[in-house]
Each structure stands twice: as C-alpha cells, then as structure tokens.
Image (cartoon, rainbow, N blue to C red):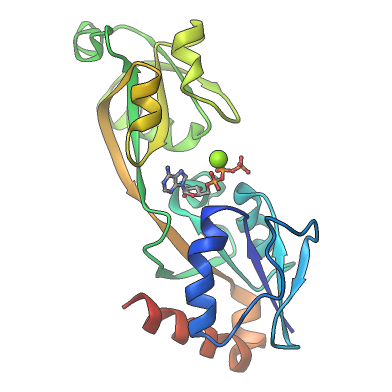
Length: 211
Ligand code: ATP
Ligand code: MG
C-alpha cells in the first residue's frame, strides 16, 4: 500500500495531472467530500488529506510514504527524514518582505532600526534578515499576515505572493524578494528502501510529467 499526503486547494488541484500521469485517479474530491482518507482507482494507493504545513510531518514519521509540500513549508519543517527528489514546479509563488506603501523600509534598514516583522515563516525570515544584517523582532502568525501592518502589530511582513493582488488590496508593497517557491515531492527515506518497487515507478512518472 502507498499512502500519499496532500493538502486541499491549489496543491490538490495541481497534483491531479501528475497523479494521472502515474495512472492514479482519486475517487473523490476533498473540496466536496469530508473524507480525509480517499481511495483511488488503484487498490494499493490511497490519499490522506492534511494541513499543508503537516505534510512533511506525516511523511517524516512514515504515516504517508509520499507527500507534496511547498518549499516554504519544507524550509520551516527542516526536512529531517525526508528525501526530496523532485521540484514539481506547481503552486509557484515567491516569498518576500512587504511593508505599507508609505513606510520607507530601505531607510529604516539603513538607520539600523529594529523592525517588528510578522510572519508564518519564522525560520526562513530569521535566516533572511540575519544574512542581510537587518535587526528584527519576529512575531509568529498563522495566517492573514497582510493585516499585521494595518492593525499596528508589525512594520513589515514576510509572506508568499503570486499576483500581488492581496498586497495591493491592503496598501502594501513588496520591498525585498526572498526566494522563489514551488512545491516538492517528498518521500519517506525508509519507505523508499522498503517499498522501492511500488514507489519508484510513481516518482519516475512524476519526473516525466514535470518535464
Ligand atoms: P493552511 O490554509 O492549512 O493554513 P496554507 O494557507 O499554507 O495552509 P495553501 O494556501 O493551500 O495552504 O497553500 C499551500 C501551498 O501553496 C503553500 O505552502 C505554498 O507553497 C503555495 N502557495 C501559497 N500561496 C500561493 C500563491 N498565492 N500562489 C501559488 N502558490 C501558493
Ligand atoms: Mg492559505
């Protein structure tokens, strides 16, 4: 049996063509079904639906053999116990620093000011600002980072952006690019050895489909 950990939403939607290329078709859509364990056309493959940030944990402990997670999530998790063979080039966006349109971020940095930055991505943000020599107090949030500067919680945020529409709608501008983000295939390292004959064909089909 192969268990694949996926999150609902864009990752599930963008993973369907890759699964199809491997001959795997989930029997239900998690958006309309409340089931968290979903069968597929193959008796030996099932999908478990988890929070995006929980995908690496399920795969790390072997509760899932395979998973698909954003680079953002993998950097925060740390990647222990995970083999990451493929960039699937789906759910593409970028991680950046954003601040209110009226705030002179560059000047504040030049002054050596201590900035309050709200983010879900504490580890990645800490590394980014340390490498740049920017002094920050990081505030952990679990969502809606765009609200933090508007409500006076922080001067800036570290968040994911694709079109920039949400930033714009909240009068925020991108002031620093951190890195491009896309989703990766993650595989439990022990499962790869023990179930290689089941897992390798799926990994190979994904690799061909990405090309
Ligand atoms: P949760 O809703 O469970 O807190 P989440 O909000 O991180 O998790 P999604 O919004 O489905 O879940 O994002 C899943 C992944 O998709 C992210 O980890 C990231 O890699 C990628 N992603 C996030 N925002 C965008 C975006 N605007 N465009 C493209 N990809 C994105
Ligand atoms: Mg979300």
